[in-house]
Image (tube, rainbow, N blue to C red):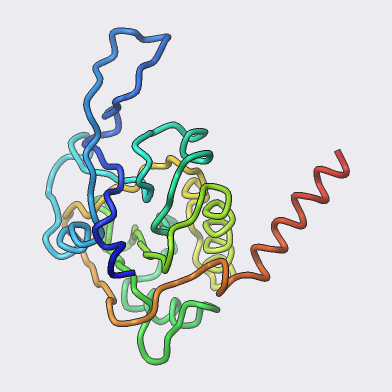
Length: 218
């Protein structure tokens, strides 16, 4: 994975940042996308931005420079899985770490696989809101990535952690660390890297078989 640390993933500032024309809004302002690397994300984990969400930086874990869901699904090359935990019962950071250590295919002896965990800007003392970023051993195409994202969220749910399923959409924005009153973060960089097509092969194959069965039924 070390040579992936400099992969230039699409990024932008604020939810309206786009560089793609809209035929229904020809006067829409277009702004070239930014890019960001894993090393730069890790820097933000410990030295987060501190801005209003309208000016906050986001990224999509793909090197394809598009915010189109269909384009990302067709041409995306994804280097991360991620989870967005905003349920009112989201565990505190230290408890979440213990939960992740019990996730099938994710533990690595005494340490977690490579990942970063951080609170969102709107987290409160009694309502933890957390994002998990998980770099992969090798990039995935759009189809494989969707299956891996679904499996990640399934596994979190099985452990009692409810994740926002919107992360299963290929162009869903992941907001980068943005310091709020109750910001907290940690990263693990000494474990092995997750390889969903290997570590979660059975779960992903089961999903593919289910899709095929649905297509046959239709």
